Length: 105
Image (tube, rainbow, N blue to C red; front, side, top):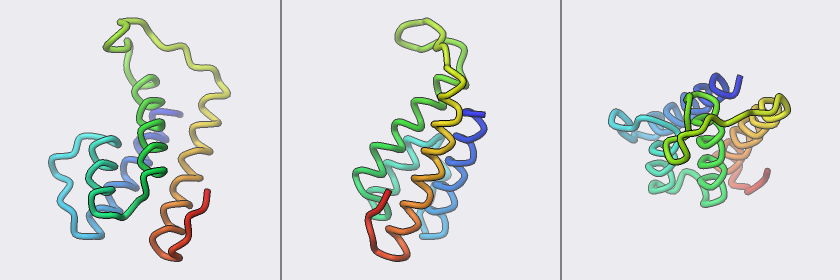
């Protein structure tokens, strides 16, 4: 569910960017999308930091081995719930920032 949640979050970021006229064809994931979006001031640095965390969760869930340690991450079942809740919180926060001009988690 972490990987699927990450895919949904990536889709959200991709839609956010394209709806605001940003070309995302070359972006391959959450990190690249978030880096591009912050450059257009559509998200804050706090949003970017949390996007990086969600990306790390997704990579750990979706790949067999960590590319630096060459070891598999063991994911506690609670991590799946926490990651999904974090994704929902960030989506709501970005929406509030963009449309209501408030910073809120």
